[in-house]
Length: 566
Image (tube, rainbow, N blue to C red; front, side):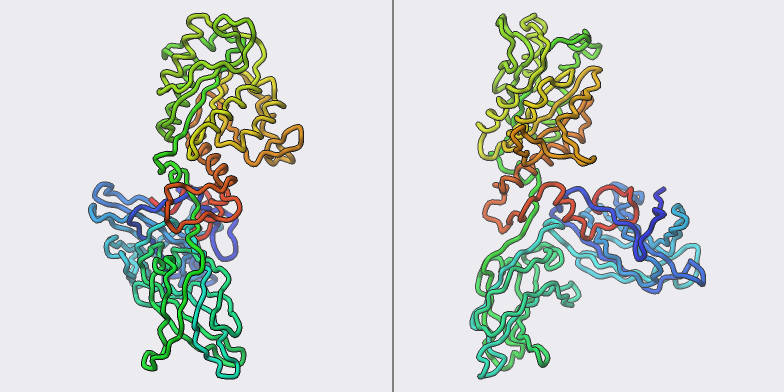
């Protein structure tokens, strides 16, 4: 059972940041919830502390399962919840939602109490506002009501409009002596009920018929539910410092029309006079979108290539290269595990290269710290075969020192040789910490500027303590790698894990590093094509994406992982 944390802010329960980047399905419904005249279960000295738990079921999943939870609000019998809850909409399956209004108790985190509940078919919330009386099977009489607004939405919760608007021939509302109005614009969302809600407005520009307003920002969901064909409402006003502002004109249009940069004719607020209020148009702007890993891979020209680098240095552990009961040795298992995750979970579809380091290969008399074992291999099994054939046929003499000072530059060379939409992963498999930490850090700084990541996998029973030297830390805070010359890495391209390789480590870590690189290089996904999407200013790696999603992602529990979407 979930509990309410003991430490509660004065007005609402703790915030849970929505970490995953939510990509909307083609048809989703956003739910906005409020309640009225809830019963008091906290005695004469207080009021109830309500939150709403939303459950869902359908024909395929016939038992109620929790979908999401709103924030809690203290001492309030008429709460308006900030949390917006998203759920997929399907025509088939008879999906239903159950809204349970609960009372929380900060003094006893495990104590919650049902105030009332109601069940509503999802189809009845499609662009519709539903008000219903709550029912409590343990209480007779009126226990309060709930109002749920369902809106069909598209796009992503963080999509943000950036509009630099301009006007021409704006009507003069200030008389002959002044000669021109002091115009500004207001933007309104048109609700399913027909009501209009102001979302944003520009600054006032004094005495002009041809205003050019500063850029304004507004969330796409707030203005038009992310739908470019949904009606919005724009008003043009004349600011007046000594009396009420005067309306100049208004228009009902769509965000698609605005973004097309077409000239939009304003209509006189007094439709019978026939006066021309002027025109407005978009000077520049678009939809600021945080790109995802999938956005880049949607480009058919985009490929992720993998280079394996295998450690052939000496080891006191004879089991390292010996076959186990599974039919694999430590290195083969690491190759298979990493390959499976990279291909199946991450989507690597390019070729595989294999390098060896720390030995004398194929009869050569000098130690190689970067030896080509295969280039352009098609499968992970071919990678494993290239490694095992050397070991099985005694074609390598293993030496002591394990250096990466030649492997990392070679991988950078491979990465830079790829196409403009390609990315590379260097997978280093070793049974001990490396011996050239300083040189490797220098090369990692260079790798950070290339389209690549470096994954080091430790196999065997070594503690790999020295690998921590590749992750500089100051005052307990991770730092970027720095060259001996003082040059800092622009991002961290390195990941380290052991042979078990948790899928999440790669499934999350690699796309995050990929996005950090694209952020630093300011590369937009080719799949965006001629759309109106524009990249955010500054860095927009995973940390910035998570921060942007904080708005509207408030939950009751700190342990409630994930987004408010199922």
